[in-house]
Length: 81
Length: 143
Image (cartoon, rainbow over all chains, first blue to last red; front, top):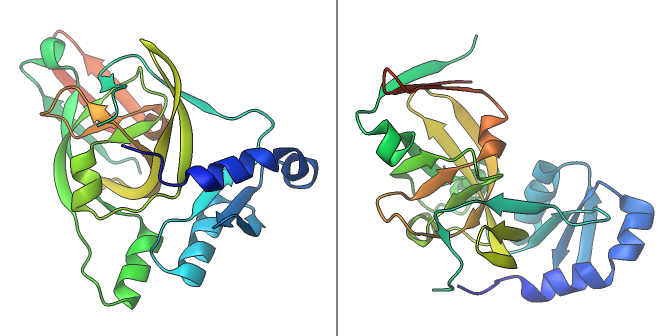
């Protein structure tokens, strides 16, 4: 499987310093390398994205200085397929 | 009042704590689908409650069946590889007790056990209590 929102993720990383300066712990909504807005919650960002674009891919991320990492001890394959 | 259910699992030690759940798009996505006059897909799947997983993961089969679209990315470490970036989706998750999570962010995964389509991680367990009763071969979940 591929990363669907790779360009939005790269855009997020590129602008992370700016985001953390003014919007730490808020949720940024990005669509096609454009910042749509910052929101207090994931739900607010999701609802806004759905209203503006419909049920299509768009990128939501909590602005953090260091990215949250999730851990799996087993049972998921790291092979892309 | 907390909603609770107990499952007798004869193969609890071998298979781990498993249960049946219903997955569908998140509530805000369902509202949008209804506005667009589209049907709302749902799927009932076997899930493994995995206290070793910090977040919940679903199989590609579920993503296709629910016609989910990506909402972000998430960084993942597994026990045998460096970090990688995975797609993130939003779903709603329902247990048999009617315990319901209306928006749950999940990631995609190639689950090695093909009888399982969802790993329920500690993000879900953060909402409730899991009792693992080894001698009685049963689990109790309450939310």
